[in-house]
Length: 555
Image: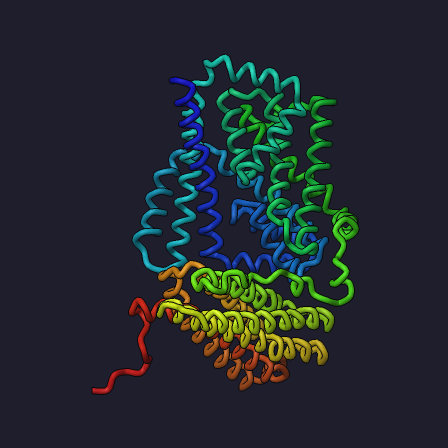
């Protein structure tokens, strides 16, 4: 086979691998986002639990980078302590390595099973969760298929003189191989895909261990670079976690590389062939990194606070978010199409601020201090400011010439801004007040009541993501799903209400003490959800999918 055709086949198989990993992660996030957030909530209760939770989340998402981005979001809102966040990522690194270990087994028989089962679930069966689970199963099938294609594409290279020559050079220049591994992993933005490719090459006999080992260790460094790169531009509180993890990985990878080159341990004993040995080396490295680094998470956290200090405004009690530049561009105010796009971007930022307020609510109910509650409440000032600026901006746009569609869109954006501002008020003036009262009186919800409120909150956070996606994409299926979720939220709130009354009748002490608090919190969560769902109404009205009334017609 001509060398150019080999490269073409290899490029196609590589991109299929990257796309397949993305499919699995997307399907898991959409189908089981509530489970992931529950794991993250459990992980915040200690460093060991954080490491275990990070491992589980990375296995489900097939990506330590995805776990890092989730952790950054929680850290930015002030509800994830830095040592716990670092422990979470160390566990996620091990989880990602275990994913590579599983996918590297000879699972060729599983390819048609995954493709058939995933295709039927994604294309033929009803229900959003079933469809997204099908996407995940399809992704696993594509991962296994891509590895098979990589093996077939690289098979002719065994007889090529080019690759052995290049491998021989890298075998004598392990540091260059280390840098190539890090750069390639950062380039493809997936340590799972990078390690699987190196293992595939090793299993084909195309890479000796002298080259594969520094490539694998470099890929571990590159995996840390991905999250660090993606977190740029975030607040310092969010950047500290991926930077600390990057330093842990860099120190561990360089130390392991030096040990391998100095002492020459028998890496070949880790597996029956070079590919298996490299995958097992990847798992052993991340397990050792977790064990050795976990005791130093506190020290690394202190170093990160020195390297990335809080801005002066934040030290003085201000909020970094209030100093972000507005997306409202006054230079395009005479062009309604561009002005409405500008207003939509600012409205998306406003929605993200409301999410920052609502995400830590249950954490504040559980263990929140008055200082933490005050910090979250301050975000409402920025929500109110964004609301006022969007309304005034759109009012000024409306004074100019506009088409009927543009005028209608302007009204829709204004209405959603009003609803987001109302949602922020409910959080600040209702939920946070209740959290403050619970902390002051040292009250505790019943086990059943807490589970009900947690389920309502998790569904609300999930629906908030869906609502913001609808705002940006105008996707009709997502809009329908959002309205369906409103009815599910109503059912959950009603079920919680009835269950609470039953506990009152049975005399459950915790339910008696927190009765008003429980009912108000459940009602507030449902009301916020209803405000978010309004973003879907104009789209569904235009498509004819929205009924004008829930009342039955009277003949």
